Image (cartoon, rainbow, N blue to C red; front, side, top):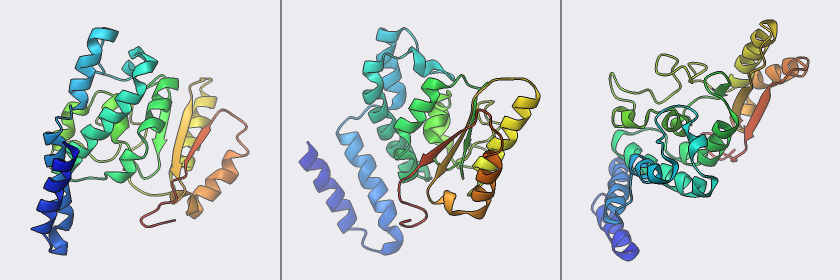
Length: 231
C-alpha cells in the first residue's frame, strides 16, 4: 500500500517539474496518497471515539473527555486531517504539524475560554481551532468569508487576541495578566512563542516587564530552530 502511494507521488511530481507548480504537485500527491490509504478525518476519529467516551469534540474542553490512552491516536488523526485540508485550501502546514501535542497539552490543563492562550504570530493555531469545535470550517480556511488562518476573537471566545505578527505574544499576555490581577481573578494566561519570534526586540522588552509582574503568567517556548528559514 505504501509503495503504491509513493509511486503515485513520484508520478505526479515527475509530470509537474515547473518550479511554479512544484508545491501544488506535492499537495496533490499528499491528498492522493492519503485517500489511497483511506486515512480518516478528525471528524471520523471523534465519531469513533464517541462509542468509548460518549462525547465528541464539539467545543472547548471536550478533549478532557477522551481517555488518555487515545491521545496518541488523536494527535495522528489531527495531523492527517491538517494535511488533507491545508493541501486543498492552502495555509501554514509545517508549523501546525509541529505543535499538535503542545496544543493538546495546553488544552488539557486549561479551562477555556476562562484561561487565555496568546499565539505568537498565530499561524500555528489550527489544532487549537480543531479542539475548540471549528473543524467543520476548515473547508473554508483562508477563503473569502471563511475561517481565518489566524486567531480571531470574532470566530470564537477561545481566541484571546487577533494576532498576525511576530514577537507580540508576551507583551499581549502580560497585559491580560495585569488586567486579571487588577480584577482579582485567578485564570491562567499562556503566551506561546517560537524561537524565531523570540529574536524580536519586542519580545525581550516584554520579558523585562514580565519579570517584574511576579504573578502567574506562563511563557511556552516552542524551540523548533525555525523562523521563515532555519533559525
